Image (cartoon, rainbow, N blue to C red):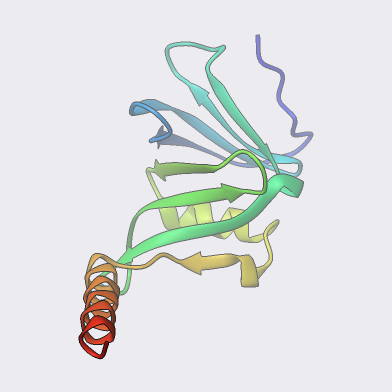
Length: 129
């Protein structure tokens, strides 16, 4: 059985992990780590210590709705989650992650705009040869 890394828990909330397949379970925000436990398989869990968290990126729609967020680690890649109340979860995370490492992810339209700008740069650069 999985042992919790936390000695004090600030928030426990229902969550969904998008790491491989969609997995439902519970997320725990505590003084030592972020923990996600699968509701069907207790041995399927994710524990991310605060020292390992590099950035937390939130997807923001229409200026206020947050459908999901991603935790970017220093060595083990990115983990995407969604909880019942993402704002409440991000507020709890903000206690342990500095504000400069909490970022807003790029939107769909920003990605399209960047792609078109790069395409235009390639077209105009080759046309000048």
